Amino acid sequence: MTNDRDTLSTYVFALLEEGQGREQIETHLLEKGHEEDFVREFVQETVKLRYATRRNQGVNLIIMGAVVCFLSFLLTITSSFSHGSFPYVLYGLTSCGILIAFAGFTKVF
Image (cartoon, rainbow, N blue to C red):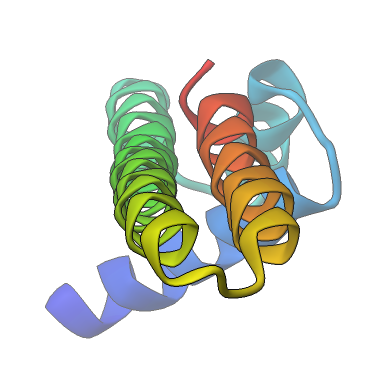
């Protein structure tokens, strides 16, 4: 039974990646002969799982971006005292951290 659900969830994930909506996925599964109540619940849980996975990835990216920005801050302070490559650290790492954080925001929202 779990193997059937795993293949069915893989099929639903593939349809979601193709850009099909919930109603289209439900009609595909109903055409395959599954029960209507089961299809609704299964598609709803699969969509929730997909969004939860994307949200977790987004939060991880936001945290990584914040850490990179903080490291950029620390390196900027230390390189300003040692007359090192101040602009590269300041602008380069900060820009990378901000881009990583914004990539996380796109996954969360």
